[in-house]
Length: 205
Image 1 (tube, one colour):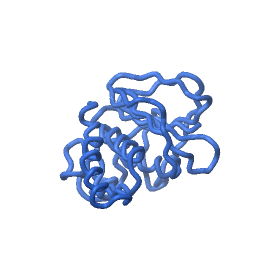
Image 2 (spheres, one colour):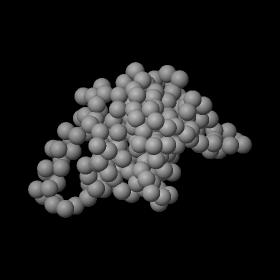
Image 3 (spheres, helix red, strand yellow):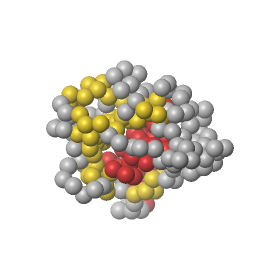
Image 4 (cartoon, one colour):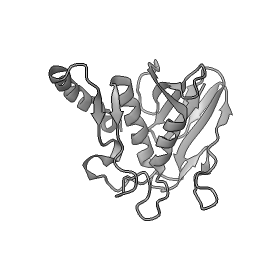
C-alpha cells in the first residue's frame, strides 16, 4: 500500500531533522534496507519484496546523500541469496539491475508518487547521454505510462506475489551450473508502455 511504502519518508523526516541538528552536512547511512530491518518476514524471499527493495532505494536516493546496505548476502530469509541453495532470491535481481544500469547522479523524475507508478530517475552507468528510470508498480493492476522516446526496458515480475522465481520480461531468471547468471536482456519499446502489476521496471532512454 501507499501508506506502507511511504513509511520511509516519515522515518527520514524524523531522523533527518536529528541529523541536521547534531551532525549537519553529513552523509546518511542506512544499514538495513527493505525486509532486512527487524528480522524480516515470510514474504522476504518472494517476488513481492522486489517492489519494496526498489522503492526504498528510489526514495532514499531522491532525498539523501549516503550509503544503503542490504543486510545480508546469504543468511536468513531476507538474504539476496537463498540460505540453502545459494541461488538468487527475487530481490537480488533488483540490486543486480541497479548495479548494472544506474549511475551516480539522481534527478527529479517530475512524476508525483502515486499508486501504480513510483518513478525515480538516474544517470546511466555507461556514461551515455540519457537517463535510467526505475518505475515501481505497487498496484495489482497494470499501469500505462508514456515514454520520452525509444527505450530499452527490463520488467521484473513474478508468476505470483509469493513466487520465489523472478521473471525478466516474462522469462524466468534461473541460474544453473552452466549459466551462473542467465541472460539479462531488455526489450525495446516506444511510445506508450504498460507497467505490469506488482512490478519493477528499469527503463533506459
